[in-house]
Image 1 (tube, rainbow, N blue to C red):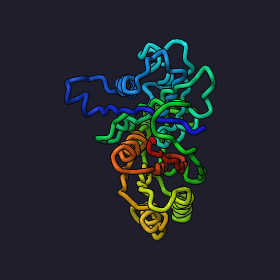
Image 2 (image 1 turned 60 degrees about the vertical axis):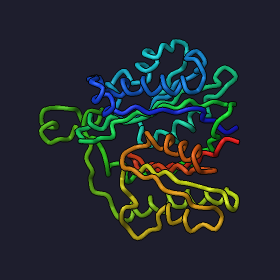
Image 3 (image 1 turned 45 degrees about the horizontal axis):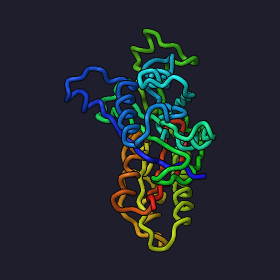
Image 4 (image 1 turned 180 degrees about the vertical axis):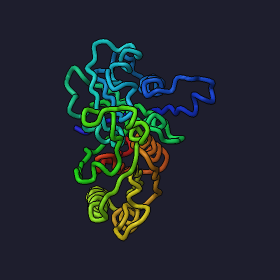
Length: 293
């Protein structure tokens, strides 16, 4: 059974600043986005059977943000699942939601996003998205995500301290190791990740019929396709004889808006939209949304 995305919403920190609000943690943004998504779905909070929160920038090391979100949304009897990998949050969340569906859990609230400024980055993209995903409903069907993981690139981007391997102390702060930093990665591994991403996109394109209008959204924290000799996902899609290429959406830093961009394309112009995500730990994932019929 393909999960159905019935609604989505996003909240940016910039919007709160412009409105004079000072609270801009992950749960602050997530609660607003979740309230909008639940309202747009036509469901009540009591209809939500489970909550999935996926982020690298939780409000605190403990407790995880899912419990904070559930509390602030007034959800008391729902299971809460926290995943610490928001940069591939849309596809991971959709895969997890599909596993959670039971006769008792027919609707799942997925909240995912990043507050990059908490990692020491000057970023305008502090944003959290929320999605209501149902087992059976009217909406956009989500074709099952596929995943690849390249552990040898796990240290290419990382926050070195604050976990159990390296404690946060004065010297670490002085070296700036509490901030997200990019470290050396080998060209061979980078090309392997690129090739894997292209392979997933090519396999996804093969599922469509001739003449279908297909778009693509790419969330790529590594900026994998800004340079290099390998083929990129847009070249694969635009050269396909099987479907008409629409447009691309690409952005650096996480999957918060990937599903929302894809949903907009499905509503406005596309028959289907491929969602490709490349996140920290060099995880590559690919799913697709199909227009409601």
